[in-house]
Amino acid sequence: QKEVEQDPGPLSVPEGAIVSLNCTYSNSAFQYFMWYRQYSRKGPELLMYTYSSGNKEDGRFTAQVDKSSKYISLFIRDSQPSDSATYLCASSMGGQNFVFGPGTRLSVLP
Amino acid sequence: EADIYQTPRYLVIGTGKKITLECSQTMGHDKMYWYQQDPGMELHLIHYSYGVNSTEKGDLSSESTVSRIRTEHFPLTLESARPSHTSQYLCASSDPGRGKAFFGQGTRLTVV
Image 1: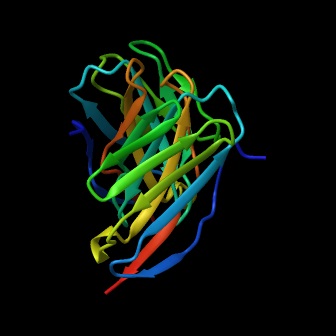
Image 2 (image 1 turned 45 degrees about the vertical axis):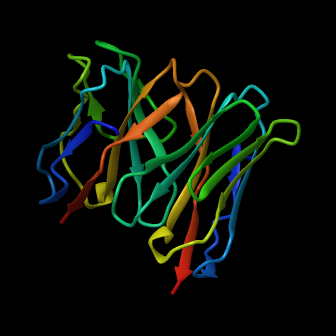
């Protein structure tokens, strides 16, 4: 079993839809949780960062961490074609050794 | 905004050539990483460093080598490139106190 699991998709939604992306993790020692956005042929870009459990909102993006169920979520409201990318979740213990999910490929159709 | 730079962005090279992929960061981060990623596939950690003069192998076996003589610089070298080395190589750094990793834009390597 991988330490971080993520549905690879692909996921296609119409423009304006609410997108829900999810990951599960197995290591209860993880304290830091991140979401990265990666456009084709580019490096991953840090999108959201959460320490421990809770919600974090930044514009159209909301990250949720539920440590009791070991579940990480990213919600995108009013999705745009420019949101089309691969989204990777990541976790770490002391902020050093990062474990990445395989990524979910998202397409937002105009 | 992340200040981590990789050069070159694209490289096409013949089999048997020696190459060095450059990575520099201006954030003063101690820990740096190299990942390998094939198109549409997941990241694989091939090397990391805790700081100057520290280098460790990652989860994926790689014929490449790395060095860390300065905090800001973490180059990756392939002594003899082969077509099987064709991939995207991503460099990253992290600040342990903040638990965030930042990536460069990657080097897309093609060995012909």
